[in-house]
Amino acid sequence: MAKKFRVKLIKGLAGCTETQRETVRCLGLKRVNSEVLVADNPANRGQILKVQHLVKVTVEK
Image (cartoon, rainbow, N blue to C red):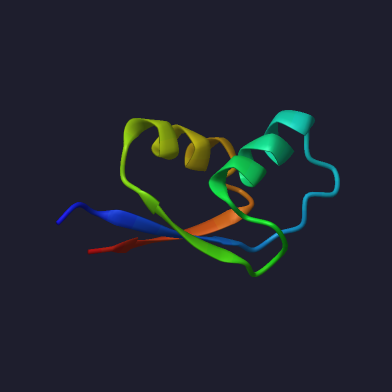
C-alpha cells in the first residue's frame, strides 16, 4: 500500500501570495482546520513544501 499524507490547514491565507493560495486550493483545502489525504508523489511533496508554513502534515500508511 502506498503512503499518503494527511494535510491540515492550520493558518489562514491572509497575507499569502496568489500562488500559495492556488497551491492550497489545489491540495483540496478550503478553510482553516480542513483536512485532506493526498498521495505521496513528487508533485504533492512540492506543493506541501511551498506552503509548509501554513499546513501540518502527518504520514498515513
